[in-house]
Length: 609
Image 1 (cartoon, helix red, strand yellow):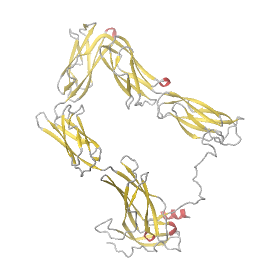
Image 2 (tube, one colour; image 1 turned 90 degrees about the vertical axis):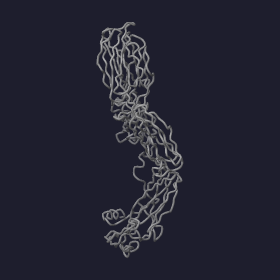
Image 3 (tube, rainbow, N blue to C red; image 1 turned 60 degrees about the vertical axis):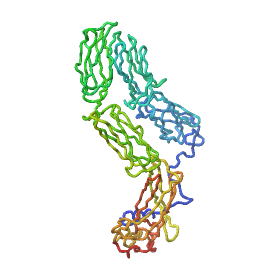
Image 4 (cartoon, rainbow, N blue to C red; image 1 turned 45 degrees about the horizontal axis):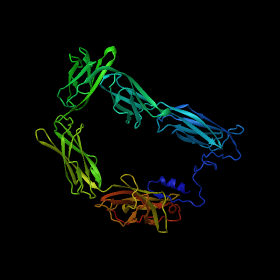
């Protein structure tokens, strides 16, 4: 009947119940706690007495699955006894080789003698063969599933000239075409030199490298990943022309924006200039004076390049060599601005814990908003807590950034009590500066309050409502032996009466009144109806349990706020919960027994402000 009473009470908007429930030594366990019929959870021992396992047949829904981890193979084990009869009630142990991921979906054989599992390749994208084995009653059998789809690709020029550099990119992809990151890739060339023999793929599965041609003729560049049966590779056959086709050396690879820079390619064959041949030019940034130029008497083709915005430009020159092959050369130029005009400043965090650090990041731009490289940024620090800032002077990088590091001490500051300023000097000797304020505080804590669905009545006059508080640090770790201060204060009280509705006593509220804790100006002051421990300390798990005690006559008639507060290294954290003091359902279900405190609110005589 208790649940019947609870269901009816939930439909009454002004009634408040919290059911107290419990069990005894005769309580039954929750259903679903065990389903092995006395077996051994897949150890391979028959759970049906007197059954001798004769055979296990393994069936897979597919002979192969993709390497991306999205595909799954359904593995079914058919277990027969010595007479070939499909046998129920036997626990089957499944396992997978070669880093396969198994989920057992049916461990104990059904009436049809079937147990099942699901295989995937989650977390391992190698091509390989996975063997799934099922065993029970001393009998086992296996089935092989192929993992396929991982592949390697390689792109880049197939013809370059002797002495030139060429850029290549390899990608390692799984069966769904997604890049496989953080994987070692080997790079090799039969005759020429690669920039690195071993590289690691980025998040998109890519690696990039350069080949320096030092030997004419045919060559093969090979990239590969993994070993043994999992090895995947790709290759490009390259023709290295006996011709020399290369960009001239620049005095400086950094070029001021809006300033033309001359580029030249010299083409020779067996040491003699190649005259009157067309060289084609292209660039990833900026503008070229010509897209094609004819070589002069020295075998040189020259263009100029300029850009109005900063960044890296990759310039490619190509030509048709004898025999119809193509030769190619590449060079890179960085366009920069060297006219600082404005500095901006930000911090990786503006609230810094004690004995912590924050990055101070500045960005320098010219009058047109271009990022400025090699600008000198001077940092200054005003900090009464004694923190440090280092380095004090930094030159900006290609992204116009200069970064310094602020390190706090064990002392806390006022809000915005630490100031960092960054200053630059313009070409006209004027300056620009920007500042940011930091606050050094203690290490923040997180407090979580919680309660259950039961209350206790330790005697005839009071209730105990159980609560717990969990305290963790900024990293989510339990904060042990952490003092927590508690308070419980009334926010609202209610006037009215109880009436019996046939099942239980329910409240009929005639007036609600705020207390001075909810409204210090207009609220009514009343005595605190509940109490909590002044302070508690967390255990090894970062939690502590406590009770809120209150007279039974206060239940249903007062809304309170429970607050937990803790302080560490000067930083205060808190959490609050608001609720109406609950009654025990057993005290409201007997028509012949009045509710706790009687049928009227104890606050009926109290005047509301």
